[in-house]
Amino acid sequence: MKISGFSFGRNVSKLYYPIKESILSILPICDEFIFVLGKGDEDDNTKEILESIDSPKLKIIETEWDTEAFPNGMENAHQTDIAMKHCTGDWLFYVQADEVVHEKYLPVIKARCEELLNNEKVEGLLFKYRHFFGDYDHYINHHGWYQNEIRIVRNKPDIHSFESAQSFRRIPNFDGKSYRQQKGSYLLNVAKVDAYIYHYGWVRPPRYMQSKKKALDSIHKGDSKAEALYKDREQEFDYGPLKGLPKFKETHPAVMKDKMKDFNWADSLNYTTNKLPNRPKFKHEKTKYRFLSFLERNINGGKHFFPFKNWKLLNV
Image (cartoon, rainbow, N blue to C red; front, side, top):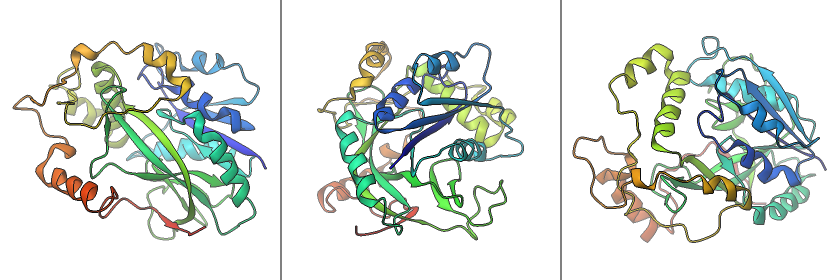
């Protein structure tokens, strides 16, 4: 059995993604790792960070992005597909540049891949998620934040990244461009794996968080719309009050140890329950979603009502 890790990115270090930690977290169970690196700005040093990993398993594929040919976030999926095409494994293990796997889950993941290798009905593996928010001590478990996602798929030519690289689908006779097509695309048959993906996408200094949001809006809405959208916004992102969020009481992945030492923006965070009066509410702060979250935790065993679900779950 062979496992290929893969990911993609552009201006990754400039936007404070923990890319080195992400790759290192799954590298021990991967036979190779493919990273597709988009041409970034001159002040970005992602390539140097990748090369510092110094592993024969890591292969860097350099590309240039074309968000006009692949609008509405589809360039993310396109770049993901490029990485998948370079993978040679039986299983393809996808981690986005802000996703990290705890070392305690690696034996579980590898064993599950071995167990299901010859079960051709299974096209992918479904992971659980922990979304950290603001700092490394708080996380979001509210309604509207996805609890699961596919992160391992079989190496089959008709399995493609989907929409904005959030998930995967089987798309026979794919035209190479329509990553958001619903017609003619099929949900993957997946099996659960008892492991979490630790998502650090919302753990950045407020200035970097605002830059990351602007970069994502540029990919999805175009550069001119993003420029107009952020023209009069504050330079620093407001995470809002953190006191009401659940505290994380377990350990972070060992590969995050040095990255976490860089945490120096506590003074910019709000550890009270007070919020600025004119700041738009996040979804998890709105009354409707707070009520749904309460019911989910206290009546539905923590499972979300009407969750995002881009797969067919097999009982295997």
